[in-house]
Amino acid sequence: MAYALDDFCTDLNRIVKAEGVAGLSHIAEKLEKLLGNPAFVAETFTDDTPKGKRTLHFDAETGAYVLAHVHLPGQRGKPHSHGASWAVYGNARGYTKMIEWARTNPEAETHSVLRPNIAYRLEAGEARAYGPHVVHSTEHPEKAWVIRVTGTKFSDIPRYHFNPETDTLIETV
Ligand SMILES: [Fe+2]
Image 1 (tube, rainbow, N blue to C red):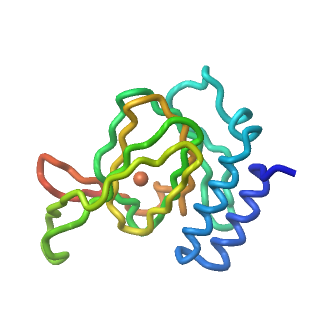
Image 2 (cartoon, rainbow, N blue to C red; image 1 turned 60 degrees about the vertical axis):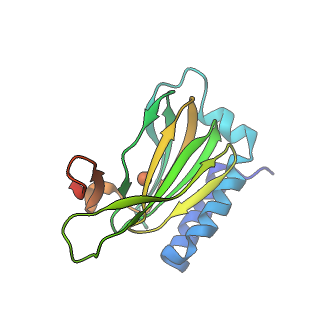
């Protein structure tokens, strides 16, 4: 039997409970397995699926969400972190240009100075984990279908994004 959304959600619950953030790479591996199932992709996205996100699954026990995103060509996000939470991104179709940013000034300073640390493409079928406080940004030059798994509902905990005007990481409300 092909690895389906239910199988992924069962594994997600088990890994989060057993390993916490130490298990993020295992969640990414499982997400790649799910993205490798053409039936899952076909039942989750169609060419008519509008831009935006929808919830595929919420795990009430761990607070984890599985979200399906459709990005239109030209979408570009600001550098941000997920605060104390985490995220795993995986592409079902198209690619994501991902940049991970490094802070170059001391934590004690209230503003953040960021520089690009690594840049790469997440291709269709690939997934990657972003742990707590990892600053990253996404860009979609072409249409892309993305699955994002988050550790908790973002409204429950502070989340941060980078403001290029002020050079600071600020809490998103
Ligand atoms: Fe993110």
